[in-house]
Length: 136
Image (cartoon, rainbow, N blue to C red; front, top):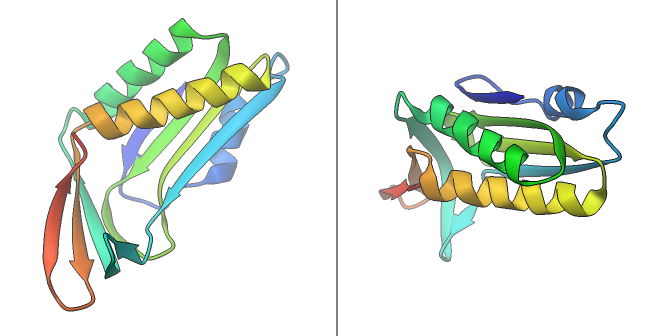
């Protein structure tokens, strides 16, 4: 299992390689990127900050998802620091014996991360205004 919070660019290839095992028949992949708007307001860029326990929390959630489904491998990386529109903020890859389990586990994991991991987003809007958005 790969579960990390990092301040460097994320790699879909790295996460795919971590779950591409002989017993895996289906891989579900989620890539979250920085979009150019939020609630109708143009966003220019943002920054993520994480609590020191964020990596441990992501690992705990990944282990819970892996234990509750027919999952063979999980890779999840979340970015911190300054990001521009279009950059990857989070990558989740789940390898399972079959596609249905992979899709369900991938969706559950990203939803759990958004709801429970202490990572905060500082959005910068085109008009110069900014706001903090809590991930949990």
